[in-house]
Length: 295
Image 1: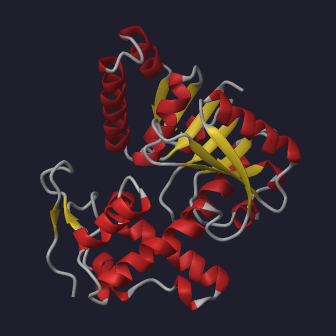
Image 2: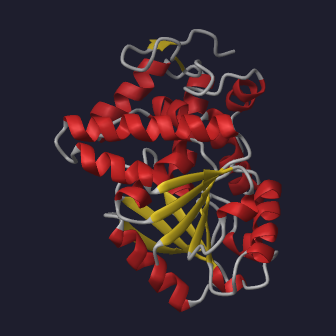
């Protein structure tokens, strides 16, 4: 497998494209926005420069990595001869179903169709394609070039052969794949999101402040980042969407999103991507200022 298509040039998509290209794969990066594609290439270039500075790679490797990536604004142009397609579009079920339905018509019967979804049912995504046995979850962690884990999620119809291929492919990328089954939130977000939600509820109920909650979890539980800061990095809109999937999928009150989270997303305070969440990210993330309105 050498030809890879990545759909979506956002944070996850450009990271996935970067990792594939750096490990010798030919990558087609697809997005409806040429601006997003240009930004993605610039981001990949900056991340490669960081690796050069750390003496992990040299200039020749940077150039080879960038040369391996071709951008497209039309899906049909980007999936020609693809051995595997990795979808990394917005975490929206309707959008993903639309993309996979198109992929089913544009790819061969042997093309593996992977989604980077962090919570949406692989079985549901596979329901709109002609070869559901080829559909699998490939949940990378952010930032993709750094984080080692890949959750490999089997849908109800995913074949053993496709699962084995994706597990080996992940290892070839220098990742550590973990095979899981298709239930809401899989493993990572089924455990992580209730913790983040409970941290938000603790803030909402006045148990402690933002810095205090994050400090307890960092110093008391050895987490590298507090749950509220992590929520800002993930995106509060993404956290809300995942919690809604968990709540709908399990029907249990413990997965109901905290009202504070709902209000913050409604107000447009989404974390790093908007410049403000539980922290103020206006001037970057080195010196975080705790936001002061959590009514």
